[in-house]
Length: 192
Image (tube, rainbow, N blue to C red; front, side, top):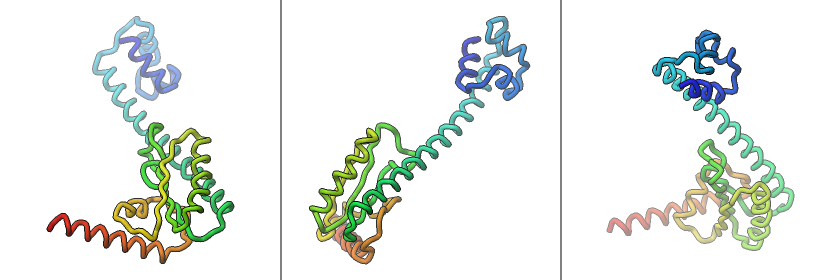
């Protein structure tokens, strides 16, 4: 039990004095617990563990939010790089999936869709995008979506949280409408 209290305290990174003050434990009592001279009641250990768990959960959420902000800042760097290298105005780049959110974890990848009619432009852009994430050790799923071929599957990235560019919004909205019509047509055919 003495090592449990010490392990809990070590998880916080607090000194004995800070930990005792935060959890309302006399410092001399905490020292006795950690040295094995006295044993805390099980309910006390559980109460401290519960409070510590709540604090750690809150800190984890804060840390995840900060990491998401850093990933979004990285995406802005990538966006500026793409805009400087590819001056054509006939593509749009969407980031979708968990990458820009707090749900992202180190086992995830980043999902990026490039909407364009120009396959050659996409090939050039894909090298830049893949290199950017490869340098960070992040796997990337990169999708080329030819906006002259509407399909329901292409709707998901269009509803993404992050859109890099807005070069041809009318054309993209028209493409989205065509994809939605295809989706409705598919639904009707299933129901018939």
